Length: 136
Image (cartoon, rainbow, N blue to C red; front, side, top):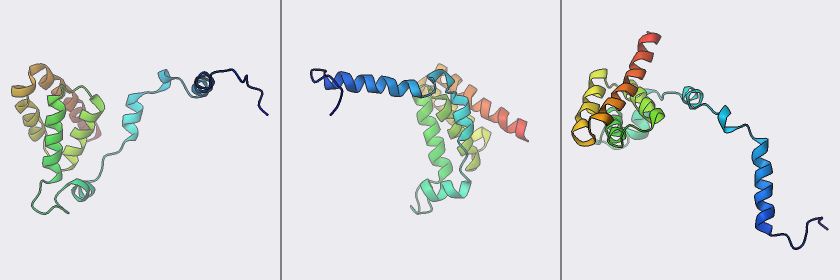
């Protein structure tokens, strides 16, 4: 036998239970995208080639080209997702792209996405380039 009110709305009870559950989790303010981004590693070049390169799809695009296309697409969307932009730049560098390749890919998108999107994308790519200089 339960001690709930038989006339209580079951959806209201479910909503109350969900509210109590969310109180048990850390606050959203404690979540840091930078910490989450730092936890994400960079795949090795060989792994990228195997997973989405031309290892399986002979004659297809290699991982470096696919990542440059991804970078172009993210720039076209206005370079709104900082983490995705930086991760794509990191992976493109690992896959064999040079800073020049990345800068040219982003610059080409200025024709379609506009200068603000290009500038934002170059700023985010520059952050990764700076990280690499610090590590060297």
